Amino acid sequence: RMGPPLLAALRRHGHLRLLVAGTLHLPPEWDAVAAQVERAPLLPHPLMLALHGRVDVALAPLEHGLRFCEAKSELKVFEPALWAIPAIASPTAPYAGAITHG
Image (cartoon, rainbow, N blue to C red; front, side):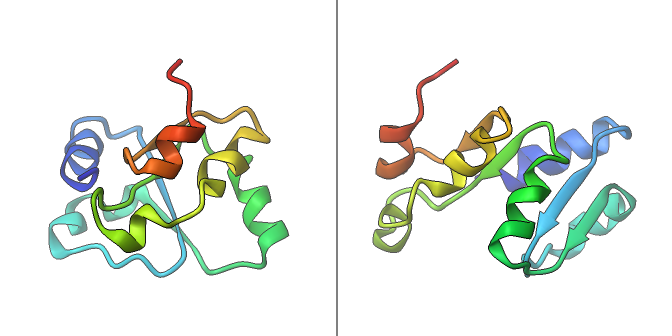
């Protein structure tokens, strides 16, 4: 799970920012870092691609081992790569097959 380590990093490093695209609900413990979280609504695909140009690292978290998540496309790591943005992704089969460490 990326949530707890990401929250800890935001708490520890006040200069970090998180851009959340879409409808992700953050639980109450995230209220302490609310000023560091920017939200973007669901966007048409071309605008979503442009959003990648604003980040330093893309996160592609999925719950490992769930059939639904194991069937998700690896596009979530290809799209940031168009901007030469590295991705931190869950070790699902599609992601593991598409990503080369380093």
